[in-house]
Length: 160
Ligand SMILES: [Zn+2]
Image (cartoon, rainbow, N blue to C red; front, side, top):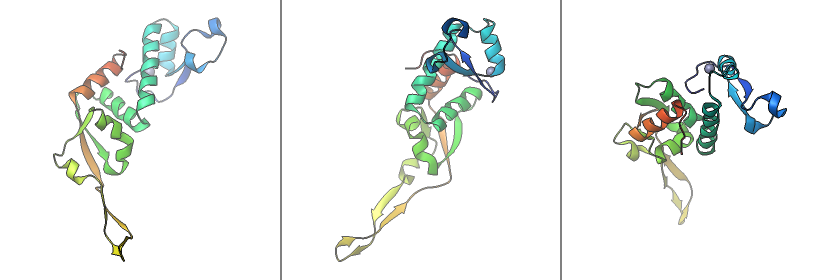
């Protein structure tokens, strides 16, 4: 379930095992033991579980593990709008920036981005590239578009 803090999960059958008699991945979802019991007792509607499963499929087809964890973190911390990530793992959260869900807090961020120049030249042959790459903490802000996505995930509403 969105915002669940329980690290232990079990595989639950979305359509009951007694009816399908199969362990198909499409019919399984990881839930914590408490939510699994609530779902089996009918306290969580199947429609909600199916939407969560569909959202997980959309998010995992587009975003990295790190990006999904960033979205989950904002889901659990609804009053926060900043997160500190690291420059060195920039490629692991690039899609959240490209899709406009996160934006750099530092106005000079773009100027710091990695640059590669060919520094040495011997007999007209370029020999070694020279990098200037930022490293260390990078503050990123959840945009209003990002906040809307997080809210939809938490509410188990369809994400596009
Ligand atoms: Zn739970």
